[in-house]
Length: 287
Ligand SMILES: Cc1cc2nc3c(=O)[nH]c(=O)nc-3n(C[C@H](O)[C@H](O)[C@H](O)COP(=O)(O)OP(=O)(O)OC[C@H]3O[C@@H](n4cnc5c(N)ncnc54)[C@H](O)[C@@H]3O)c2cc1C
Image (cartoon, protein in one colour):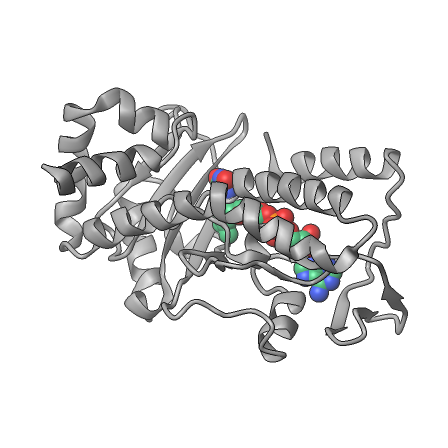
């Protein structure tokens, strides 16, 4: 499904459940002490609970970090992603979602088919790539024999890639999804974690109605039991894989797919947790 359609679907759900939507009203500041957000229109809002679901450049996260009420991870973990839309020409591009390794260090490329166009993208961990990402993307596009890369409109985005927080909240302020760095540190997928963290936060808010300042504690507890181990072990796996030269990523992944096809497929599709990696690691440690 197209991302705009997907987001619009959930926006309609929220509005029909009673949420107020204020378009074109970006938050420009968040006062952590007063629990108050200021918008570009000069409005000021406060609430019993503040949910920071404002994406990879979250103002709410920045304000909490500045006030030292959350601990930023010691390791860096933000990726730059380049993406473009290519018109579909029969036979020129894969008809199934495909992921490619080897074009950039510490990252991967993708090709996702839509009815009328193809999305091509590439992402890599910022400190590892510097200016090589564009070159890697051009090489990747050329290898798919798609149109002249110079003629395409390439967009750049930030992507959390391992900078997830251990405690994504403070008192009655909760950070969700990309704002808390919750994209998979290996595959970059964050939609599942955005939804899952929202579920955990909603539960914490419901249970903390009488004591709003207890919400972050509840949320962080359930987060550390469920999402946090997934991200840690996905990150550990990618540290091992991406320490190899890029030309080795593919043979190693291909060998894993050959040896454990069901495990790998279900993990990539999100049907199986990265915890299986933890169990394997524990067994290996015991053996
Ligand atoms: C190129 C690219 C491709 C991706 N592909 C996939 C994929 O195939 N599958 C997958 O699972 N994940 C994918 N991801 C990751 C995924 O998009 C994110 O992890 C996910 O969207 C996170 O959801 P979110 O709600 O936390 O943040 P977002 O989707 O970024 O939503 C944040 C919202 O906050 C709003 N906002 C931001 N700042 C302010 C402000 N100051 N004031 C008010 N509002 C603000 C934004 O307008 C936006 O509506 C991709 C990411 C990128 C960059």
